[in-house]
Length: 151
View 1 (cartoon, rainbow, N blue to C red):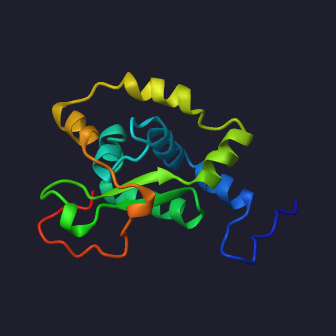
View 2: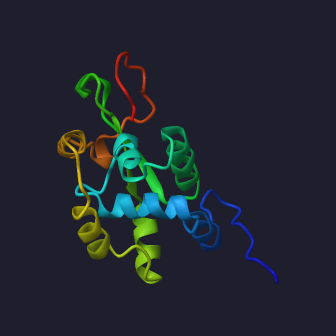
């Protein structure tokens, strides 16, 4: 069987994207991103919805998903961060949403309904209420704040 070749430019081909998103843990993370009320959870939130995964494991999966263009990392600018709260959040890229829609994967309405059914502790509800950065205000290259958590 011949597999499609990886594109030579910076954009991974559909085969590699689908390969990355079909791993069970990554699929669960994507479902949680899609279902999240703001569409951009932090690692802290993802660790609560995926209790069997360590935060470092979640970060590793997010790194793979970033590498294949499925998620973007959004960062709250240093002067706007709140001590002790996450300042990095993850959302689907438009390309990924289009690909998922074309292939009937991760339907937003169904995953939002599923996410709404989760039992959430006070910390989870508080994390969900946090303001999120918008893609046009992202400063992901500047992560030098002390006393803050990126999660």
